[in-house]
Length: 273
Image 1: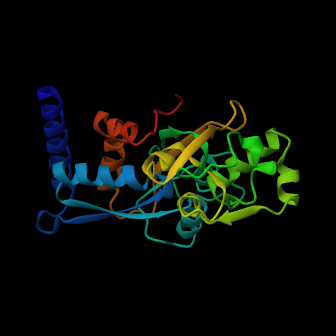
Image 2: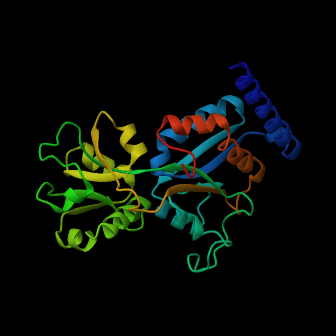
């Protein structure tokens, strides 16, 4: 414990000394605008609290939403210092170094050398807490008479894209769409809310979202192994930031052992695990 506290103090000291060397001493109170996938709401709020304790001069201001919505806002000129997406696609579409087949517009919003993978997640099927009388227990059950309505993310939302990928790999996507039983949601938190309220029989969310609402939903299945791409969240500082020193420092902090521990407590795992 002493070693950990000492490490944090040293880290904070280095940050503050670096900031003061590059910033006007008389005006050192900074707000960082961080756009983050909705599924990171709980963990990133905890990160902001921890960061505030060691670098009180910096206030983190979040914009939580679906990664597709956040990407569009950034494209349209929204003030964003650092972006965390729930999928590589949305970050690639903003990164000039990404495959041109993905970044078709040649967009160049990500500051060179600042992109990194922050966490991994999993996809789960959830039902309202204590209300699984029909015995939903498998992703395949969504196309049976056990389910009348299922909540999925929209096609521009990473969790929706993973959901479609799962059902395509199961050979059930076309059948599911034709059954007219999908309620589409704008982000993963909306899917979670629909299930928690009992408005649908089940829904597909990230494992971390299910864990954050364990008193309202039950996890009945994990996505079949190999049914979707690994869920890895990329992060990157934006080229347009007017606070590059502070933004890069916060990005480094997100990779620290302290933040790794916070993410793991909220159900995330290290990238690649």
